[in-house]
Length: 173
Length: 164
Image 1 (cartoon, helix red, strand yellow):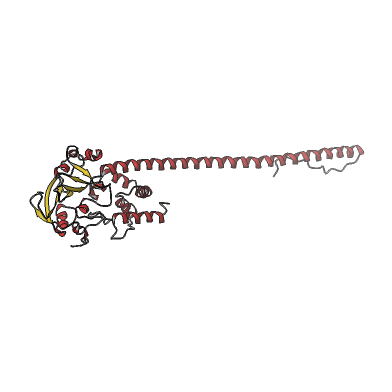
Image 2: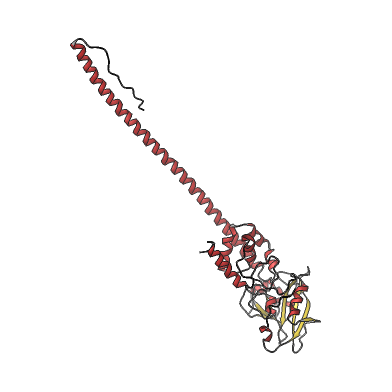
């Protein structure tokens, strides 16, 4: 509803020509004013619509910015996690290279820290297993509660079974 | 040819006779190598993770290692002196009593070892891998022997005898 007031025509009976002339003048003036009022009302409505659109655009921009920020933070976190994983894995590999005991390998502090990274470590472990096979089978077994290898598997056969599993589950491409 | 990384982890190799005889391989370990098996990683797995082989149901103790070698024809003996027609192994034990390594004697009297996940080496003496520094394996505590078969006949034996 328009907020602009319109002039209503008078109901009084007119007697003299002057009165009628004046009345026509007034009526003509009134129609002009009413047209102007309609025009203002239309412009106000247009401005309101425009303002609403601008408001929506601003809101969308804010949301996009927030999403981008979250995306950057997630990416940064993933990068930090990857960096931490590789540092722990490289040290572990060097420090357990000459032990034959898998028990000693998995009780190494770095191995335990990798397991403590939780499910975020699964993809990293599988990538590492693919890049440079090593004794990550226990960590994968613990983190996934699965073991895709057959009971008679040799170490390398078990590695292959885990890589296939990783592809099926979407961890590896 | 000397290997700086090996000598860092086993300092006595710096002044001892040894040579690297294979590339690194994470797929088998010292027990496997002592029994001529380069296909499997011999390890008792408490959590039942697959990909490892252990022929008995005992855990990873010196007694269980000795039982595994007994299953393959070895019996305890006094020392690592070279004897004709006899093949010997030497089990290293850490100060905490846990077995850490096993080496096999060659016909030349020298020893051959698979160093964990790393190289196979031939070493002149058992003492070169002994000690408590760096990655050293502790001390040799047990010797075992069996009749040496011609060539690599032992390597063809079936190792999958499971006992309780």
